[in-house]
Image (cartoon, rainbow, N blue to C red; front, side, top):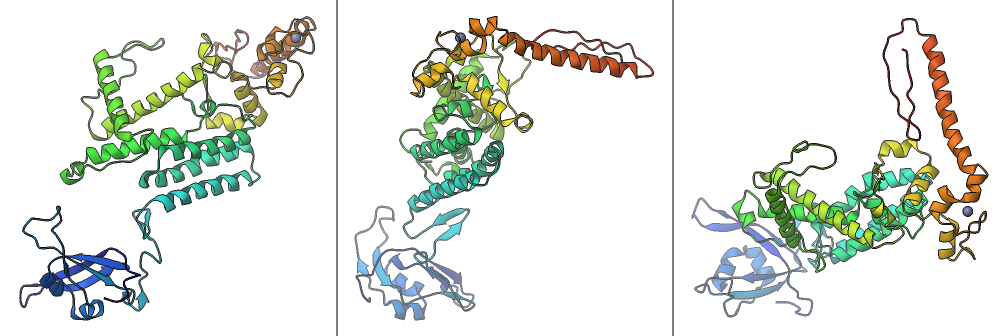
Length: 445
Ligand SMILES: [Zn+2]
């Protein structure tokens, strides 16, 4: 035993082969990291080590009480060895120890501490770097948002899956992502992140929230361990740790209870569709991937309900929860590409009442008075867009109204002119319904 002050515990493995000559196991290869703790009897130690290694290590065998993990009949000995002087090489290339260079296997990095804290810190730094790089790229805002959805999000989910990341940290990461998304879309900082990631809102945007994806990923992991076809994996009791605030195992229990309840309730009609128009697989009959998918969908529904309940509590941004006749609108990426950036911005701000109306400017401390400059009444969003009596009297609303009508009339005239040039008219009637007015257009093709 050499200098004891640098001694610590590490990991090691010795590979043995059965010799055809004496039918006994002989070590053929070994791999050690920094320090090694060897368990076994003194005679076993000597038998396991090759002669060269034994002289280098000079293991000291100390008898200790038997550990509970081992069989009661097993005699346990402990030896600690200084292996700084001992290095392995492969084809002349020295193999670094785990203290010098972390090992990456199955997409996960292991360092000498065998903890995830360094990797989690690195993930946080990586995300900050990616977002800042995108922010400084000089691209239009919607391009940046697209890069987040299709580039950053899939990449960040992998480290969140393989390391034990607490949910509070994921919340912090989502907060920084929302900050950048708002900036790229030109939205005010006061806009709730629910407006960005909600799936049941009146205006649905094509972005996915990191929290929701994290929850779905971790629950899928739990179910893959639990329902594994390999009995050893299924019965190993692998715990998926996600902090104290939210636990994947509990979320699955809740989701399964909800699915069983839905099974008892049966099919429910929704909207104008008849009963059974959208058949869904039954939870008790689903197996494997289909079953996992049902639970994951239920996790998403639960997350959405949580968002909705928070939105109901917001008097301004949650006003849409009280709209009865407004249609739900889903913005796709195709629409995002076609739309002018300012139009998307106006659309989102008008739904959540965060436009710079006189009332809002006054609330934000940017204006002295919340009054409308035309009629001196309170200038809320509704007042400015459709309720100002002075603007109505001056024909401002009618002007906007007439512009829409003019566009429709132009389109009608163009269609009529175009139809006159067609040689063989077919007697078919297409009814075109506009959003603002109902007009029926006769097209003779
Ligand atoms: Zn007014």
